[in-house]
Image (cartoon, rainbow, N blue to C red; front, side, top):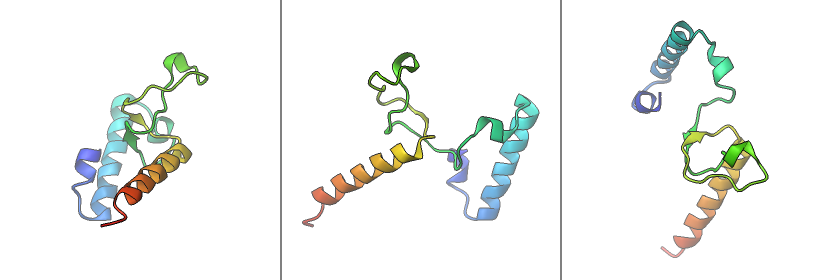
Length: 93
């Protein structure tokens, strides 16, 4: 989705692509989009650790694992930290 959606110019085209993906998902996997995607927009990345060894949240999360970013609070916290680091490094320019 990301490969194609980012290249589309209008929201109409993006909505059309999402509709096609939802229909293909329903037809080929026999699952409704909202059963599979619980948080929208669908975001993936490797910069917010969300996967724990054996699912044990008391352990340190795995890093650099490309996964769905469903915890938007964690995403916001990490993004703010990256922005803060960037601004402190580039403030004198």
